[in-house]
Image (cartoon, rainbow, N blue to C red):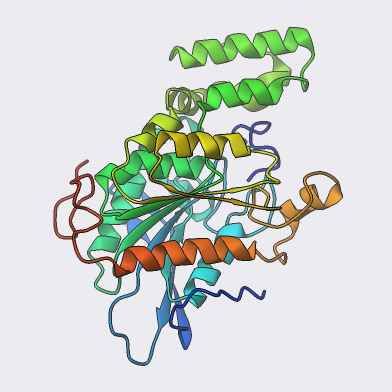
Length: 346
């Protein structure tokens, strides 16, 4: 799959945290799969092990960004940087369990949607709900947190009211409808006649209409097989979805992100003013500290050895620690989230 190649511009170890969390003596890593009834999604569990556990650790469900991004955050079109694996490892070092997974139709979850036409935002949302249900019934875990990166932040926001999650983290999440973002991305990258054709295609897809005639230079973005997914994506309003959340939220955005801007994070904060909000100086879209421009920015997308931004790990760990420590029922008292033993709304 080569979805949103331009919009997802090159898409999407020492991590010592100052957060006062008990350091685990070891970390258990195991395959962790989900049979959705419509295919099996393959995932990985990282579970901190302690000699004398007092309570189950919180668990974060990591939701990847757009395109064929796998459980580790690698993307054959946009880089091999393992940002999700790095994040999972850093959380485990701070006593936080995590599950990350290959999205439907990606990597080892490819058999769950072998045809690009089968993908949709709604299917991704349903998968998050199903993962949440599985985690909620696993006695090894405490409170559940959704962590969505880029497009994954939108998926997390749409899914959260139907899940057992009691907090949500948005990493580099866009606030604008993706069709609008794509128009902006294409400005200056296409000749005026081709840009006009792209605008017409976006207009039609935003209206929910398949576009059978696509100029050859635009097929990488608008080929017929990807259009059902684009239609499902273009009708979403990320800021509106985020504003409707009734659970604690954390917004983290890097100042050196060349794919999602600081203004998007600020718009999410305006949409949900009670959110924790932090700009991380120097952090880019794949959560590394690099200059805004120059070779280091693009090179980081293919360098899994670069450490994650230290502040990112500290902020996420502190937020999850706070969520884990609140009295039972406090996070869900609005009724927007599902109690641990309640059936999930589908």
